[in-house]
Image (cartoon, rainbow over all chains, first blue to last red):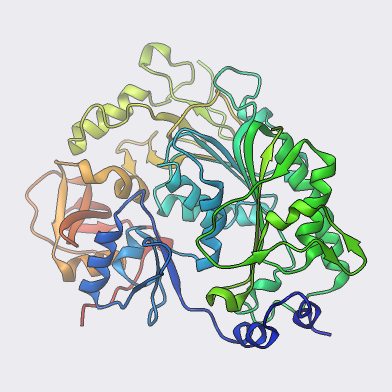
Length: 308
Length: 171
């Protein structure tokens, strides 16, 4: 059984699901509003003869049908950043505000991190953490190219994340976050259109192993968020073990609840049953996006309110 | 005076009177340098803090944290100090160089493409030698590309290798 066959019982249209998974993804960029306006990017791409199409849900997310995003002036200026359409979603759902204190628990290589910075208008404190030292250079390179100045880069295991380096006991330090994004490491089944070898390393053991890590990271994220604050949990995978089961765990382990949110892309609710497991009914508030829904990669996203 | 510890971030002292680490640039010197060299408004850096990590590497951060702090990155690398001629980073110039009014050299489309690819040029320039902000005209405005070092009638591209690119001429 391939990983995709495993989920056909969950999918509304298995034929369309399989067909979409076999198609390559279009090249998509996000406009970096720290440095430029959408109008100016359009004008610059027009002047260079680079074709671009707006997505129907966000003016700052555009498809470049004929171009790799790295060889034009807007890229050289840090005006645009290659970022898959669906991966724009979690930062928008977290909705950070200027001046907020925000933690991106699994930040590298930084597409969503830099999007968070732009939504914060490059103010407040954005902590971009990653446990792999080798991935931090990509995070820093992307953040600097896009002109981000509100980012603190840390290299910790997010499951035991310490606020001590952020001066939690000092007046000007960070004692808790307003919002946290947990874009968790996962089995990446939903990236099959971008990474055709994503299934080569897939195994059920890996799914179960990574689910344990996800639970640990999400738990620490909820603990590090102030009462009334927001945590967004996302993965690029379909496995309920890594999605609804992780939410079910956090709902019983910490003082938090799932909340409804408006999403600009089509999807279906989270599943409350999988194999022999049953999950908390509120996991239906999560959003599952399959590749055939919006012609994107696959995605899972949930929004939690802490200590409410 | 103590020595610089290159492994952590220390906030720059406000002025020379507050300096505790020898050779460390001060906040007022950093701001004065951008104002003197490139004509930035004196309030351009209100609300930002400046930090040193590594020998002479100054970072700009949009907020503040207690000093010192042991993290991997704090804002953006901004300026190289502890050398005779201070050098702004490409990313700093792209971020704040739009406001520059002095020591700015504008290149035409062909020269801008060559500069971005890392080529040295011989443009007409009768201003100061040293580090210049290199700009070109794009999409209805002038935009900084990066830093050039002007010496001996030559403009050397100091765009870091990871930021160089070959942009095709328009069709």
